[in-house]
Image (cartoon, rainbow over the protein chains, first blue to last red):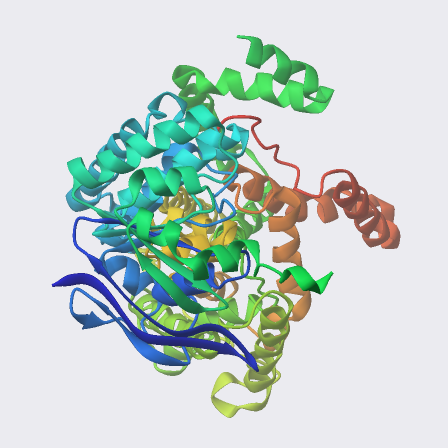
Length: 259
Length: 334
């Protein structure tokens, strides 16, 4: 059974159709990419999946259950975690505090635990810290854990965001342009990291990316959308040879006599 | 190493000075001995001071409690509340009515006071927390006035005259009726408020408030229920106010609607903003400033409020983040 199924997903803003009858499936343990030209509606798909936008019609099934009408925090709780296209870190907080945010939905101590410092609270705090540390170590920036997030270089800030998403202990990780703004070396490390996330942590990955080199390297299967419509899906080779994809990216070839 | 150098250079003299001060307090022994000294001083103060001083200090402790309560709402959760005095009124009136009209023991009225604050908090914040910033401020402002006008026009609150004859509390056989008693009572209350604030801040809940304040969407993407977490802040803050109000009622033995006007809300808000929203020592400092300044400048007579306003303007112009400094580069956990 597919981990995530999107059925006829449509999202309209007034007259504009941002996502149009999109249907796709993501199998457990796979790495899938969603590509498309600027403004194709990729991020809108993510926003629908994570509950930030409410789809106009269609359905989304995560582990066989509909996540339609679920609030973002419920969806995270169910095991779908996301990163943002433009970094959305808690800038004035330390790196480790940022990552500790991810554990919020896996813990439960409240007001009285906090004020009375109950045993449960202390053991939970320790667990939160341990998981945060482990996630930071996994992405390789444990040594910066006490810096303020805003003081980190861009590449490291990205890694904090991945660590934070991992700390929610997801089954499916949605990455919105994880390679944006990274240099060549950081990108190759990202490829390695994504594989490790999938292989070591058994997390399915669904990503939006513009860097074709990276997409071709890691994803077994690619979905291409344009104007909210799925125009192709398949392996790297299949997609690359698909005339509709070439057209979406490069435009239609003009006839010779149009001069 | 190079990084520290860079930091030093980029800091203004004031920041460099405070950074040194913070480094001093990073030493646990220095910090703890400083705290113990302050505590000893405050415990000994009533034995060796006038009733007037004790009165002012008691006011200060009261202010610490309500300011820290409002700080949870504004500083921790980032919700502007302009009607905070209404929650103090709720606590004061619950204790006042139960004690003066029904003759219930003061200590037994406290749970009722808290329950009333929770109900009032839910009634106000439940439907309005979806509003943000200015809108919430307007609604809370209205709420503050509604509570006051209700208290003035309803019979069981004593109308405009208010309630009189609220019984003095008894504590292990001692009737608490001296200013020194209340000094210690509010001192303990203030200490509890400070400890609670620190513990909340360093907890899962406290971090959740901070996450929401920093970036609401990212917080909800991390699985934080934004609405209920905010509601929590609002209600906990309101309970601080109501408890302080209950103690206020037994200290004064008489309360009237005019003890809880908009100006009171503003003064509490002022102390919080002045000290530095979300910064616990800053808020305590703000409370001290707001209690002491009008007293110390009594000699100037009628111009003192003008000068008070001027000082506030200057502080806000030069330190919009509050008197208490932020730590540069590292986490602000002090």
